[in-house]
Length: 254
Image (cartoon, rainbow, N blue to C red; front, side, top):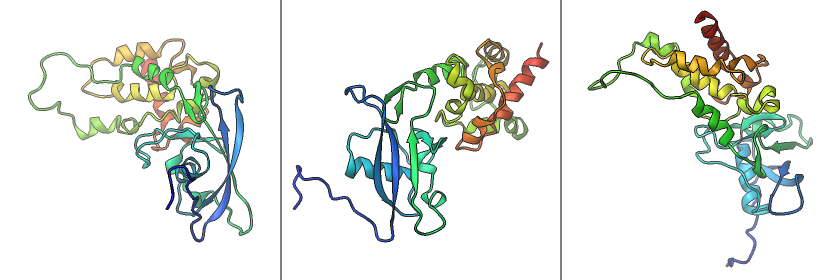
């Protein structure tokens, strides 16, 4: 019988291979500063990277800190830099990372997303990100009497902004942007995507107001079209295209 004081045995599934996780660590409550820790973790091709992080947390180092919730790519809470690229840990399958040739070892580098203050290990302070999101007024703004049932919209009108409704606010796009890393006041791709969703909504009446907000010095013109944001989006949103459409809307509204 295992008592509460005994360490939990670390299981090694049949057919698993060992991989090395090199994880960026930071704890404001000790004097170690930012550093790296490495862990040997067993994995199966069907595992997600999130499973490996949970293995470390459960069996090897309970102090490891990261965010996760739904584990199905819907909540967006487990965004992190995996081998230098922003991804959701729950959507990264180990079969896509494991070496094709037997006998080769695999090392995976895991860091917090960039451009936001690190609170502990892989957890960052998301408030600057959400401040920019709130600033673009990401909600339907209308006047007149409320309808008794719903605000009717054609399929054609809905299709105009359908892509940008997919955003889950994971911050993968914004924190992959070099401009955001160097200019913390830049709204960032996610805020612009969520503004786009309402700017082109035929039921909304505040498009001009949002365009004025994004015409600011820290707004849409900071985008340098590097496509990092589009590549990082776990929902497949054409982020750079949405930003370009907002730029065109500003040009044509002058």
